[in-house]
Image: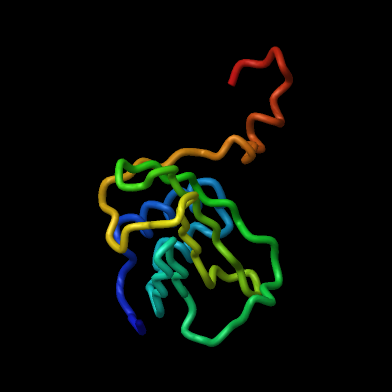
Length: 128
């Protein structure tokens, strides 16, 4: 489905969550518009750029938040892909085999494997 409009409530929340943790992407994510959204049944691929691209992204992906909702049996996750340093594709996925096409009831949380660099920089006995 080709689009050119604002992100959904879930997409906006994920982009804002990433922007808060990746200041170098914050300005671009704050004005992101959706060019294409592909629903797979187990999630979405949301294209943020108007040019064609493929899986040969040039930078490591950015981990997004975990997604918890009563409509997701095992929760879900997200990841932001970059092309030439620009956000190009947001992947939103279920840990199970189904992700609802519309999800407005959710909570986002930090995956345990994502380490906040500000916490890592603190000596063990330092006050945050």
